[in-house]
Image 1 (cartoon, rainbow, N blue to C red):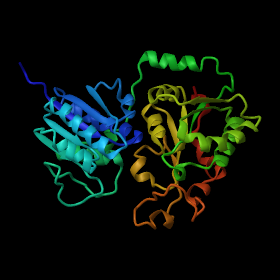
Image 2 (cartoon, one colour):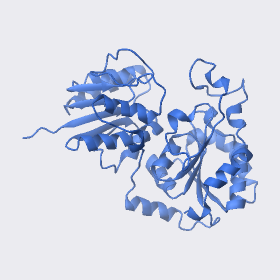
Image 3 (cartoon, rainbow, N blue to C red):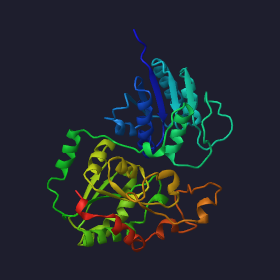
Image 4 (cartoon, helix red, strand yellow):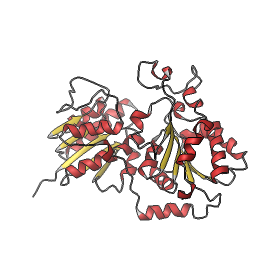
Length: 361
């Protein structure tokens, strides 16, 4: 009996990182068509890999919070994964924990990329090019493929999410009786991994009003529990505006897969740099992104005609901690000016050149 050849790809990161991994996974399968490609990602992001023809198995890691339980979890996972006898393990964004786990799987070869580290990589059987260089996240993942001899180009590794015809039909049914406006349907990406990545609520409300009045736009929100405090600030601003009444569809606490269905029914994404921005790109929407504490270089590897962004360059507060980006959760010292100073008026001309109401769904 012929041995089943398997490759394990590890990307135990946030939702956006998982979506950005789909392009490198596609390239990997093309180079190794006879191998099963298994992808280990952090739950619940694994839902988004369903339906991809180049992923044969999805392993969704659900890591406990308590230290002892976490160690026990990873040891059990190692035992289960060893049974698959992987030929190759590719750890796209290795932490100490995932790098050690990958090495313990006893694969024929293990390649690990520690993005921000230079020097010898003790957990990798090959040196990964470009380590320690600030670059697009997808390009960092592609460096792992380059380490095994794959000529991988950034433009060939754009993300994608695949929805079945049944899923798209189910999503269309959600909006079948949508009566609030006839213009383009715009998904409002109000989320963010921390408060400093969110465009201010009063800016969002002002822009929504103008989109409704001048483009007859309709709006979609999909929020989770962590959005509640910020949404409580935005919602009253929207509700008191007669131009918005009846134009906003709000979905709450949907699964990631359900959120993907909802996003697929929109033509445009307007909002923060977040996992849902990458989801929108992967589903084929046009996007307009507001960047604040983090520069677009790493997190926006997209065509800027179809996917423009607003970003205030050369703000010294971003690097005052010694990093090349700002990691604080709440900005009090600088009044969050990286986002506050991106006003609706300052982006309107760019947005009207990008937004085409006739292409809305």
